[in-house]
Image (cartoon, rainbow, N blue to C red; front, side, top):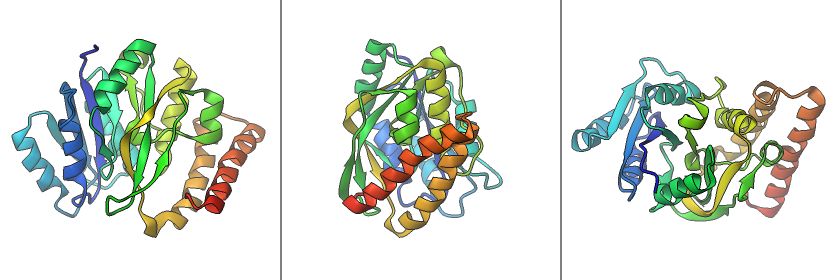
Length: 253
């Protein structure tokens, strides 16, 4: 079993409601060789106090503070820069890792020689109630990634020994999508674990607005990180747009 350190990057902005549970889901994993790098993006609530209290009891937790609100891309990249582990994992401040995630995922990566892996996810609402399931294929090719954008950020881990430290593009949204594009372009298909190891939180009050914004940034990332022509960008974006329409018809988005 691989035993290298995993650095878990968690961007946080006014996350007091969820951050204790999020960080707790990492430090309670049976795979214990981790560091938790929480990057606070100039919060105005009690997020920092909660992390500082947790860090005082567990040396694996580190808090980095940004003086000016800079956005998730910069916060995550600061966390990547600081990380000392061979593997870099991501977790959003309102999501939760499920038990056994790291052991299963690290073993699968070692067995497959994979540079990037991800998992399926349970979908929960702001109250922690189960509302759905997000599946993942066992192999995510470059073409499949561009058509379906199936990787949930909080499920992903990549190997810096194989890739070096790869950062996210500096865009307001979908920066994680840009990172997967770059990694899969370099290393080939990502490994998907079909068992859910993450509870991914959705917030109902912002879903409609987020659909429009997410679509715009999906297009932007396809053009920028994907380095695709206008024609190819339109081709792959059509899959994203169609998926959103079908999802609304089925009542799953």
